[in-house]
Image 1 (cartoon, rainbow, N blue to C red):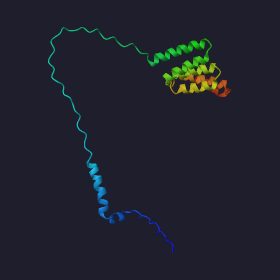
Image 2: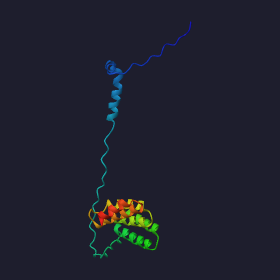
Image 3: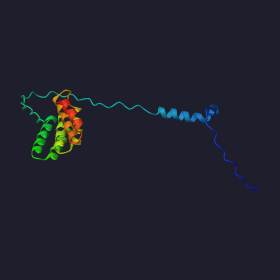
Image 4: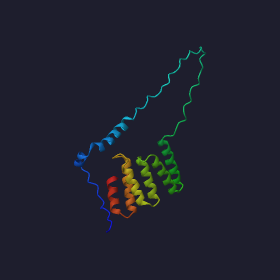
Length: 181
C-alpha cells in the first residue's frame, strides 16, 4: 500500500460573506491592535520659547555720527548688455567677421529673446554671410516680436523677400516686395 499525501487544500476565496461568518475572536485582536497603535501617536510638544531677560537701561552716551551708506555699484541691465553686444557685432561685421558678429547677436538674443530687432539683425547678418534659409527663419522669428504695422515689420518682410530671392523663389520675393515697399 502506498502512502499518499493528502491533496493540498486551497484557501477559500475571500468575500464579504466569509468575513461576516468569521468568528470575532480571530478578527478582534487585529482591530484592537490597530486602534491601540493609532492612539499611541502623541501630539508634538509646543516649542520652547525663551523670554528675553530684563535689561537695565544703558547710561546715556553721546550720539555717534554714522557716515552715510554708500550705494551699491550700479548693475548692468539686460538692455545695456545687449546694446553692448550689438555694438560689438556691428564692429565685427564691418571688419569682415560675420560668424563672430552672428555669435555676438545670438548671445544678445539669449539675454533678451523677445526683442524682434535682434532677430532681424541676425537675419541680416545671415543673409550677408550667404545663409538665406537661416536668414528667413530668423526674420520670421523676429516677426513674432515686432509690433504690427511698424518699420521693423516692414524690414522683416523685405529681409524675407531677399532671402527667398537668394533661394531662387523669385515670384514670392517679387510679391513680398510689392506688398511691403
